[in-house]
Length: 212
Image (cartoon, rainbow, N blue to C red; front, top):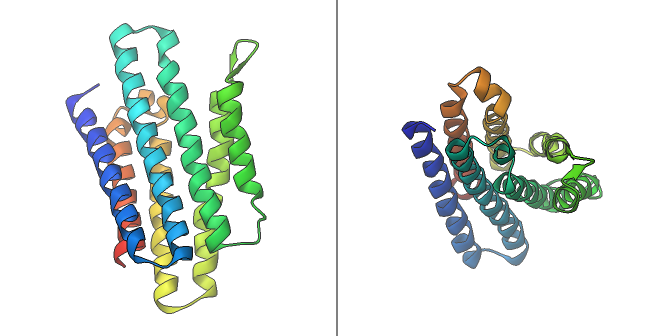
């Protein structure tokens, strides 16, 4: 792993910690219903941070051993589980507090995929984690769409806030997409673009959620 890539990933992890603490601190000053929404987003940020930590450790272990078994080893599994819970966390609060017509079906699908990652990571020696992660990511695409739908149902400040959050989440998803092993192997520049894009997405999300 190049030093610059390592530094950028550490910056993402540190920023996620700061963002999470800021949300939790903010929760001491807001009304109960809004507080639960913010706690859910803090859970999302913390789980995303843990996922980044586990994936970083996994990459460092693999680059040290060059053992193919370590490429998707224990820390990769833990990172995938944390990532699944991150998606579940934000999906639940969006379905509960932003758009309430989906009856938590997408959240349930994400939860099932995450639980399967824990109890059934492989079938007959075939790694299933990528499939579970793809399902969760597919459900996560709904999140910015819901923010956009709500944004166009309202006006003024609330509309702009919803569109800012939708934009931030789309950028986050692009950052995650750029982090795919196949893309990074084919285009090494994505090793730098991915953490930069994720960091940008969270900065915009932070601004839209707590400052705008």
